[in-house]
Length: 328
Image 1 (tube, helix red, strand yellow):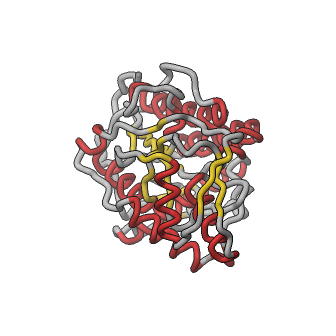
Image 2 (tube, rainbow, N blue to C red; image 1 turned 90 degrees about the vertical axis):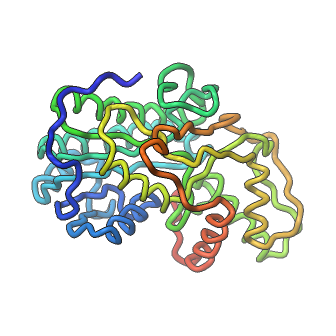
């Protein structure tokens, strides 16, 4: 569905010595980007915490861009949450994300930031999109009702990137990750996504000596998960190699049932009790697996297997249980 792009600058796509702003650098995705970019030789990385810079504040964002003048921007900042958070606070997810995206993109455009990568989510695609989901499935059907407000905000970001390409000729791009997990995740009991929520639930059950863990839904929906360090590597690859208006799916191309994933978590934690399912709670989208042919065709593939990644995330969780991100 992506429209053809206008003329794009013939300057080099990425300069590792230029000022590079990572918006949301303390979050799950942003912190992984920071680690990876630093390891890959970026010498002028810039970040601000939400306490230092409220990206919903337009004047503050423009003042920051006037001061820093980033040549490159990775827009990883967003208000995020699981099914319950999205379903109960849709206004917050819509309003906050629209303001964050618009302010950062407008300020980057005012500075003529040469390269911008907008990170969205696979929830932009229709609830019943053909599997695996191709990039051209965008806007072809109704969204999943439990997170449609968040999805609409992310779709607006994609269109914003395409509009800048058409009107101003800047080589901005968008990437749509599948479900993410890893160090730095939100393990809040009320605000987290399914995998970190499971890690916390099973680990607490083990510590308490409980025999049963109860998860939401039926356990039958299928989900794809990507380790956040793999996402960071994919983002750098795209910034160096990709220049087109169409958003790029980022994932593994492999999915599992929620019940299977619960089994992987129980195994990694060491929980040997019973898993039950609360079928009065929503399942969300029945299946969501991305077609990653565009990305792999450009020469990139993930490195971290799901069992390995869950085990390392459990280790990280246990080492940081006293200072976890508690976002409701």
